[in-house]
Length: 167
Image (cartoon, rainbow, N blue to C red; front, side, top):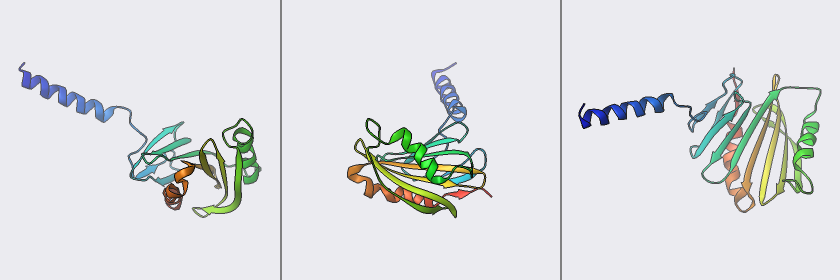
């Protein structure tokens, strides 16, 4: 076997192994939930990773922000405010990641009822949307450094505006 043939064979094997190797959940553009519950637009500068068959998703941007999405079965017996209180019990308060709650208001995401809350702590601001679906609840979180949170926020707004339930 010549050197040229060996190099060509190595390149072909490398290409084949790349094609079947585990990859990120999706390339930037569109993320389709593996359980066909929703479709999510992804900023072009971001990378998507998932855990738990789409139950937990992270979108990391090279600009320095992160968007997470957690999903679970909808439970109408637990209000959106109660869900926020559970989240706050874990993350908000002395010696926790979030030191202060900046606000809370009702919202709609993809024609679904939602609760928007905003927190600060550890040099970061976090905007959270808890969204109630008929079958699935969604918790979107946007994390960005305080110094450029407002500059990066339109990226999160764009993701939320393009969130769609699967038909």
